[in-house]
Amino acid sequence: MRVLTVDDSRTMLAMLKHTLAGAGYEVLQAEDGQQGLDVLQGNPVDVVITDVNMPVMDGIEFIRQVRATGAHQSLPILILTTETSQEKRDEGRAAGGTGWIVKPFDPEKLLSVIKKVVH
Image (cartoon, one colour):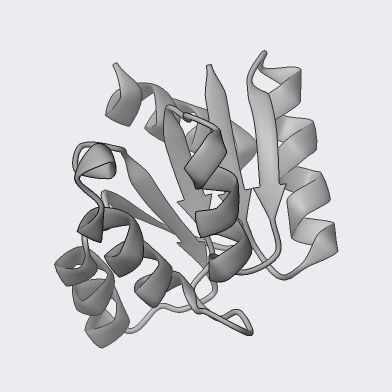
């Protein structure tokens, strides 16, 4: 199974890669929403994990753009962020986000959520 992680923090990308690769997932990574879109163009994935606050293109706009393409209507997109406001959660859901996880994340919980949304 292939996962795309989108986050501007190299530390977070490394933690996600360690957690996901350790669980047997193939991991693709991008540092902002635009890079995420570029990676998605040529690489089918089973789930996306994205941050909200990033330069170039934030996670909410990234989700909107992904959902705008017919090929990714049912792709699970998990939002992994430090944002906790209900307003941001609602914005993420309205954009097409599948789930919301607050950083710092629990690796076991993250893997459990991925299994729920993919299977």
